Image (cartoon, rainbow, N blue to C red; front, side):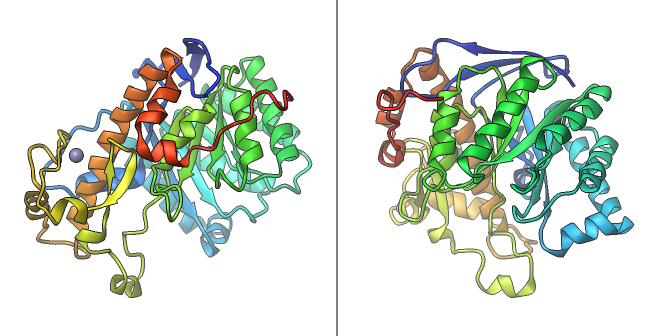
Length: 382
Ligand SMILES: [Zn+2]
């Protein structure tokens, strides 16, 4: 897939956000932003439900986690490479007719060599992907420009879209320098998108403000590994807050429910009552208890909740053959979140187009409470 062009709909206002139209030469054709990508983790939830709901997502993100020795194994053994390739094939087949990006989740302290990039490139070439990704390079890497250039040329030769990731936790000067190098490549139409790895907005505010100031550039910003809840005290949905900075496409970080090891079963999952459920009215997560204690109607028309009270929802999603207690309930809860969050991006898009994202933020308790104002007149630097 190649992107033919990226355009901004409506004027950029002083508050933030932007609405893009992205034209591609793929079967998907055109897609609009802001949007929520469906990750491969979320896709797994769908298969755990008693029925097969249609998802209608246009953009998918296949996530591969390379933590600890898994990265070393990937770079040094044939078996690990082969398993990753099979996984990629499995998800690309399921996510057919969507635009597919690949996100290699690698610990930020790892130093990625050229050989590593080559290995990841080979893996992605074997799969049916639209964006070919290069991971964030360690701050000590002084050849970022050279490496990005040659990576881009390789990907273009395959008629695919390069997606080079930057870590939001890079020091501001380095983040800005690398972002500008990628913008240069976008000005000559070699790439049309930049990948971003989510890190705390509060800790990396300068980088987020930099994105906000550069919203006029017609390059699609795709963010991965986004924490679901903004902070321990403010359970706002982080990705909805992020749209203000002009980030266009959002992929959530893998949840912590699925038990990886035997020992985790003691601790996970939380009970139904303690599970956080996405409330689109305020863009926050609230305990399921807030509905179930009064057995209130869930007030949601999405395909998993439609017409159900809290009690009916629990009864409906009690699977017989679960790997852990509450697996089906959790899957239904996450698919509800996917649907309603996707709808909310469509809703906020209308506000962005008419220059009223500020109004939208005002009407949503969570966004209003967690928003950090940007000083506009004090420092007019780029
Ligand atoms: Zn729902």
